[in-house]
Length: 258
Image (cartoon, rainbow, N blue to C red; front, top):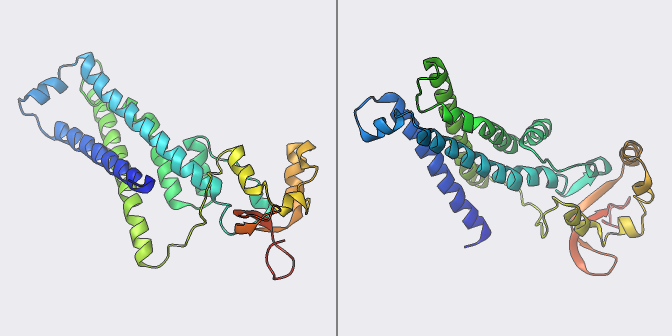
């Protein structure tokens, strides 16, 4: 299997698990039959609460992984799309679901924001799911509130996962899917970012960033914003003469890169 196909299978399995858990909760809430399942759910033992809490922890862990793999990387590499300015150089990868949600909203990235919101909801899912098995030490209102909040969160996650399959297909049919630049290294680390600039003339010859490493963060960011220079990301010929993918400064004339 290719990495893309393997990830698609894992997402499909996770979608089935989330949907199945939601259906199970709805079945428990809508029926009162004298069955072994009903007796297990109403046993008020520690095992049933531990099981549903474990389901919440599992879902939260998977969303955290999916967020770090997809949203954080997407927000990190969003400047690495064809043309960018010196202002776009000042980015930092989103490290939490909350910061990723804020950056997705600010950057108007719909799918990234939806994934980040699902990751935020998953943080509270273990608490919600622990209230699904009814216990006599909590009120009926708390049980109902927690249960339906859990159902709503699971339904939203299922919609987001389904949309992750549907949106690429719809975009391809409408001809709106743009060809993304191939990324040989994920730029979500310092080493990954250095890969794209290590052979660039903007660092070696143009000297755009000379002396910035010794400055304070505020002064450095201000000078970067004042540079007002444009850069291109894609196929380039580096200082070593080797063809590679990286970032280089745009010439003032229309001939291309430095």
